[in-house]
Amino acid sequence: MKGKNWREYEPAKKQKNRRRRRKGGFLKKLILAILLFVLGYVGYQIYFHHSKPYIVGLDAGHGGIDIGAEGVINEVELTERTAAKLTELLKADGRFRVVQSRDEGEAKSVTDRNHLFKRARPDLVISLHANASEDSQAFGFECYPSPPGKENHDKSLKFAQYIAKEMEGIGARLRGTDGVRFGYYVSDEEGNTSKLLLDSSDTQVYDYDTFGMLKNMKCPAVLVEQCFVTNQQDVEEFGLEEGCAKSAQAYYRAICKYLAINEEKK
Image 1: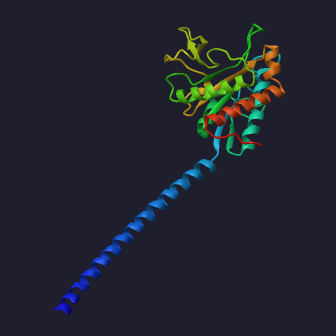
Image 2 (image 1 turned 60 degrees about the vertical axis):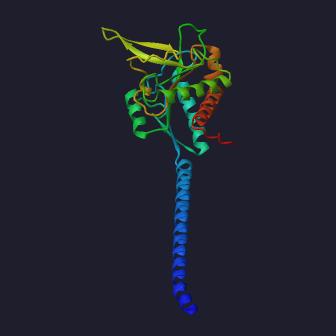
Image 3 (image 1 turned 180 degrees about the vertical axis):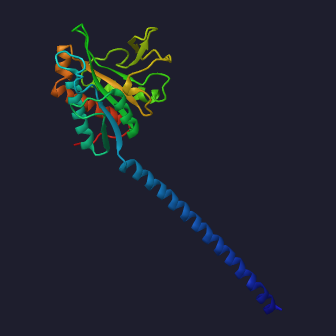
């Protein structure tokens, strides 16, 4: 009976062990599969974020026979000079692809430049301009993000605040509330259009057009007025070769801060 009981018991024991082994093998495979999935996902995210360049839409205002505002220098001189400096910085960084709205000296409508950017699907847009006034004492920096009510307003406002802060850091005197304003075009009953500039503290949503390079953009979009071309000191500080170079550096730093990436150290 003892042997019989032993023979009857042994097969059951082996079967139970086999079940345990099968169960243990399944858990190991499941854990391995989960681990491989996590590693693959993390690897994909690292590859996607670090190998795919950020696309910057860079617009040098005016161009061709349109020289922009006239003063100590012409506005287009400043916009093209700064665009060239910023393009150089972004390309040297290696993490950016620059899409320029036009070539140097080229005339292209705002509508065509806007459509070019929308096709390129940039991560952000910056439109370079300079200010002017009949008062030669007017000075300072200001920038215009997509205004309240626009799909990209919050992102644009954040980007604009970074830009203004960086410009202040290189000595620019900020206009309005911390250098940020909203710009609109208002038409009267006769079809005449005038520009309406409001402080960024006015968060009301208006049914007005905004600047052409900001319209219908999904990404952060900001138009900057780098300095007054009608003010000698402003031009000397921010409109000539050195001033455009340091302004481009400020824009580059703002771009990196907005994208939450470190500046590339040279």
